[in-house]
Length: 65
Image (cartoon, rainbow, N blue to C red):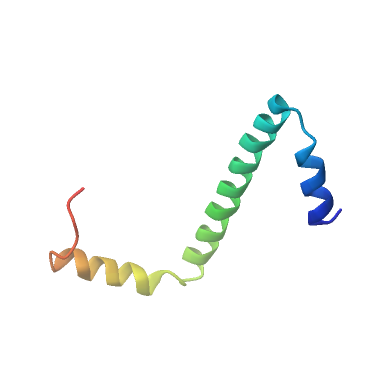
């Protein structure tokens, strides 16, 4: 199934099924994002950014939450 076929199928969903699909898809995308972030962290691809953030914090250049 290609993207166009998916778009057509989704556009034909009744409102309640569209809401159900939307909720599922949002969770799916969030889980995929979390997984990629975890793999990036384990591979060390975030180390430089983490160090930059620590330096900014320690220098007082970050806003208070």
